[in-house]
Image 1 (cartoon, rainbow, N blue to C red):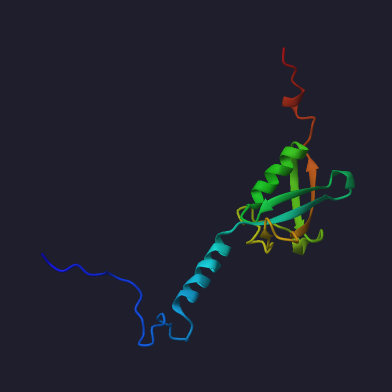
Image 2: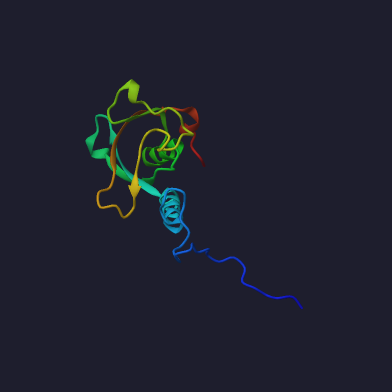
Length: 147
């Protein structure tokens, strides 16, 4: 039978220290930093959206969402809260055409809304302004009486 020896392991330099990377830092510190950065990137970030309905202050509310949430999910929540609506306009920071959020498939991150980890000491809050028109309730199908 052949001789069995150790496979792998850390190589030591002549003075017995761990191998160093080309920039002089120990290699395990660089790998630890890379691992920590990857964990931060994988960590979910959250943002609190302060939803403000134009001209009706008592309908304002807050939503805490992940920054990976799509805009269409927010629109579905508004439809659930207010019923049948049309011409929904959502704006970030102030109600102006230049601030309008139009891309339904875009995430909050894509729309420039950054978040913070859930356990962050200071949560991120973003003001969202929205307006809509309620659907017509004189629709003939709504007026049909079920017997």
